[in-house]
Length: 229
Image (cartoon, rainbow, N blue to C red):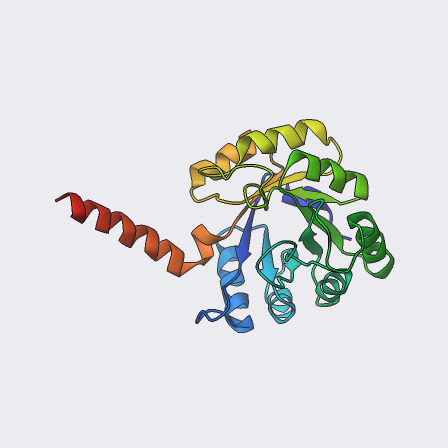
């Protein structure tokens, strides 16, 4: 089983592409993951069974796997079926929705965690949106608490950058599972700030692996500058 201590104070890179994008291909995902590892990523986070399998065979670092199904509500590895498929694809860590919202298959988070444990050796990362989510996920037996959904469930307003307050609150309230910061971390300074707030590790995705968004940041800024001239 993966020793989480290997990820302490390290960078995890989320290698994902949205449906319909040119980079939405398992081989491309694996190549992006390889590039991230060359740059120092201690683990990668990958979406989709085929992409997980491809990345798993391409890199020697832990793979956090998830399966997004839908766009609203509980859609990050939303059911036990999704979670078991992610584990079967080779993910060292199964990331799933860790909020207190109703799950599509009717199972509780605790029931889902228990059944994943019965079927695999994968660790479980609960993607949470609030302190109450994190407390419930820790009680349910999650190995890792993520702040992935902070600002996206209505429990907390979205912040400009990572929700540093929430990171600190969860760290102080849940001394057991390590807290991994994820969500709106767009600069090295923000990643450092997340560690300083108490995060065990930091996940960065869009700012490293999503060219369309990164390009848009530049074109938007240049357009705004041109408008002032």
